[in-house]
Amino acid sequence: AATFEEFEYWDGALHEALSQAAHNGFLTLTLRLMTEVRDNGEWGRLKRQALTPARRARYEAQHRAIVEALCDRDAAVAAAALQSHLREVEANLFGT
Image 1 (cartoon, rainbow, N blue to C red):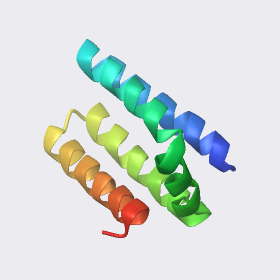
Image 2: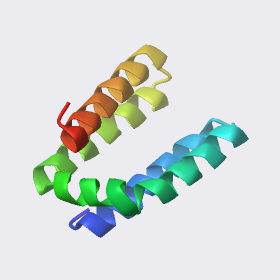
Image 3: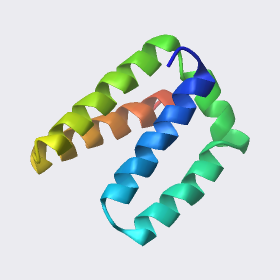
């Protein structure tokens, strides 16, 4: 993704695909609601400020690692990669 908007589109598509693959309607609905919140208001502003090209590249690499672990059916590696990704996103958004 070369732009913020492209990254956001593909990031959302990845989240949607993962929720669909889980065959969990509650997860899918919750994710869709979270996406609406993420795209607007304060969260949307924070994302725009925090999502530098370098961070986008890092997130893309993290996403690839998560998908690779899922394709390998390695739940432990996938969970560790996902948790690491979420901690990094949190730190980048909120400075924690």
